[in-house]
Length: 213
Image (cartoon, rainbow, N blue to C red; front, side, top):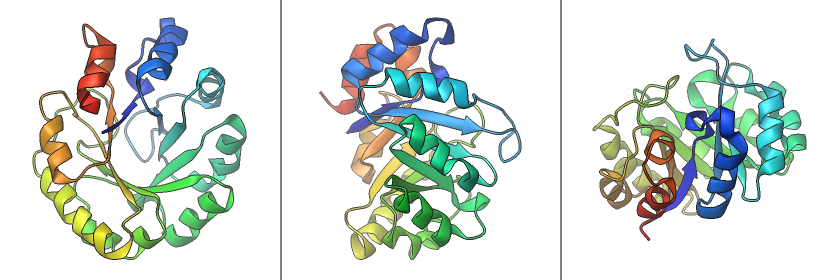
């Protein structure tokens, strides 16, 4: 399992330490970008994204939970972000948006909220590098995994195998060492974990358990 710790749950007073931890044990650094419009919260802005990217020695991905995400693609590319996911629910012209990310040389992902059917992705999955299934309602960390999202992973896997086997499935929200086996068996390739990593007694061990090591 590829593990992408969410820096939203990191200790911002000791950010350098948590960046080093993730660099040493994880696979991807995950940035949750919230605007207070698409989701009911604001996370962090460009200066913090730049700081994290400068300290990163592993790939950085940005999950844009914002309206008009296309305004930030070139900026995040310049800061060192390698992958961007945008929400199906936030993009009126999703094909154009995904292609714009790819044209800039980044990997493109499409995120969906818990209520959004994976069946709506049958076409866009053909040009996506990954699909991010939100397994909590986006906007806040520390929420519990929504059980029916496991079925969504299974159904999405069928769609991907039919249309674009190279596309990865990423799961974000409520992922723990207690449910990682269920999520993995359903077909997920990548998991985002915030509280499960940074609130653990031994964060490095938690990452390894999620990875299946």
